[in-house]
Length: 118
Image (tube, rainbow, N blue to C red; front, side, top):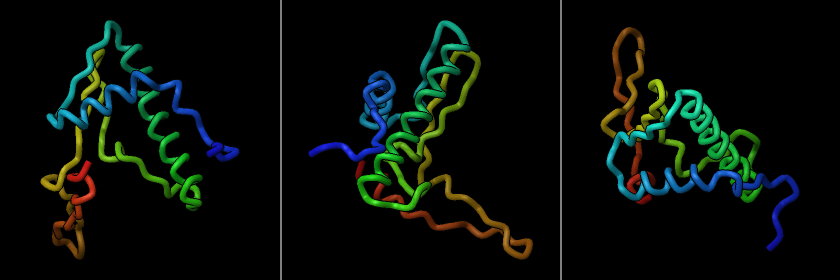
């Protein structure tokens, strides 16, 4: 099967893919990545976010989705930069967002069954 015309290559992110796959497999949060310099941590975080953008974009092409609606299995991860360390956090059902409606807090129900299957 040939790649679609605008397909984005993921081959430039083997380190990012390895870290994220390992983190998801271990499923112990947060995950910390330590770098020699804060600039290297900043650069890795940028590449990790670019990798997720490419995954979403490729999903849009494969599924013929509207631009900006693609998803990837790493969408529930957050990368926090702490000096030369990156903390990777995973959102879970225990962190359901709250909405304010007419001055009252209302807990939003989240369906995490898809996340739990990963």
